[in-house]
Image (cartoon, rainbow, N blue to C red; front, side, top):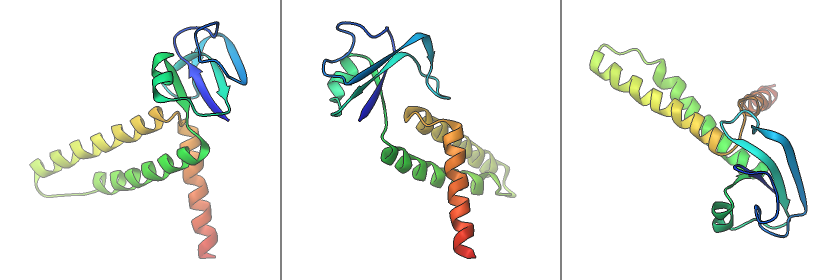
Length: 140
């Protein structure tokens, strides 16, 4: 089942592609999870919509859990790099400034990836916690 958020108008005739199996109209436009997106509702399809349909109807696709997990793994790697870079203590002020800019860029990219893939900060923290618990169990 594929889920899409209707971003710019309530769900009605001609506002979403035909063939959905379920729709949910919200009372008013509301924020999608903890992202910057706002939607009027959500629609569900058995088959994934084409990029053209998503674009033409101004929808935002909710990634599958597998896709979210992949993004979370990538973001975790970026986060690890970010943590290592920001903790560097160097004797060259210019180099430190450049490293600070790189770390800011990485942090923005982390936020962008989470937001673009409709992953809330809470989901990210839960993912990090689950990885930490798995590693602790492996060491026991």
